[in-house]
Image (cartoon, rainbow, N blue to C red; front, side, top):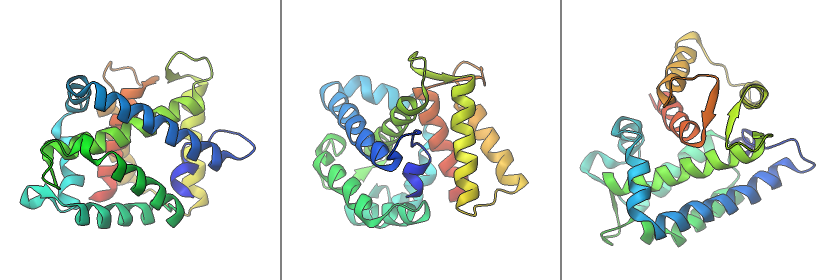
Length: 208
């Protein structure tokens, strides 16, 4: 499964590890969001609207809202693109359904842009926490040095195994996405927030 292949650590069953860890971290993120809505919203909005708008429009938000049906179709398209199995698509769908009320703050059954940001921000935060768990060998809560190199190398290896080619223009766009994700100007370290920002920005590169 390509998605978890990007974050799986060197373990006996890396995909199972990634799946289990993603679930645990998703619970942590959504529990925090439910119990600290103001703080979570502040963190999500600190990224900036430009990181969310492309996927919002891609998922049907041009009319101002994304319906559950539109989000389901959109999520399936993206999941198929990154190679997520139907089993794990159902896994993510069931989890999202369970916590829909956390992000659908006005309870109207659809997500406006502000609510959509909460949903996608939560997924980005979850993925970032899994990456930290996989590669943060010294336990300082960020990636640096050999940890950052290992994560980058894993992504390059995964792309090669999937026969994904990145041309010069796309590579430059991904570099810009990484630079934009840095909150402290230090390319040699990546915090959880910076990893989440990079995921959002990098995803937008492939939506163009």
